[in-house]
Amino acid sequence: MSRIFCIANQKGGVGKTTTCVNLAAGLAQIGQRVLLVDLDPQGNATMGSGVDKRTLEVNVYDVLLETATVAEARQRSEKGGYDVLGANRELAGAEVELVALPHRNERLRRALLAAESDYDFVLIDSPPSLSLLTLNGLCSAHGVIVPMQCEYFALEGLTDLVNTIKQVHANLNKDLQLIGLLRVMFDPRITLQTQVSEQLKTHFSDKVFNTVIPRNVRLAEAPSYGLPGVVFDPASKGAVAFVEFAREMVARLGPVPGPQAKMA
Image (tube, rainbow, N blue to C red; front, side):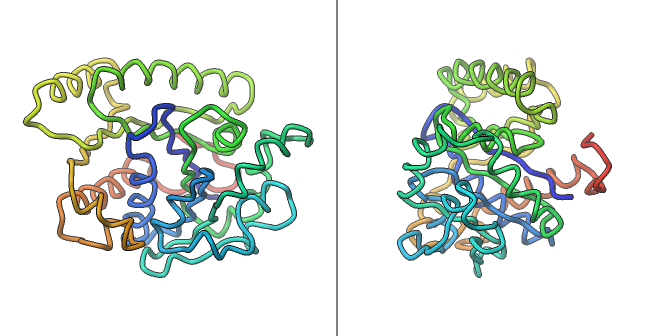
């Protein structure tokens, strides 16, 4: 039984895709079987994994419309060591088409059930808005990982996201929970960031991951080469931090539960 996590934050530009791609590569490096699902029509996670979104004949759009299975649509990120359920501009049209379809919030969940024995982790990169695509991600997931910068406005956005998670948990997905907050693009030289980091630990305690992802140029450069930062420059501070984060994830969650087990 795979663990399914949605990488989500309703605020844009906070490093969701960078987190998703590098966590996938980090988990693959420590021996986990990983599927990355790109639910953003921009397809950045697809391209950042070394898969050309422009040449995808079958993608997550087809999976959501149930004209293809995950097994038929997935591609291999050869350098990253994980599978990708890619996205491109076609996915923008799914928003309109899904509205009229039955089980519109559960289409991804139903598709992933057929592939759950193939993976230890499924990571979903969601768009920065509460759309039908995001809802499909949240309804599929066991938990949400929130990458966030330690800035004042990020705290306000976090409140909205936590409320969204609670609503989805109450009405659509009883398994959904907040797994943890990941501090990204962190610069300890900036006093405000250190203060906000302490506030997060005070309010959310063990929900804040111990690993901190530093602001790192090499992570930002990696997508232009079609590589996760973890592969592009393994010795960089950002890459080392993401592999450390992958280890923390596995350690925190414990053994993969069997088909009848619930997540802790």
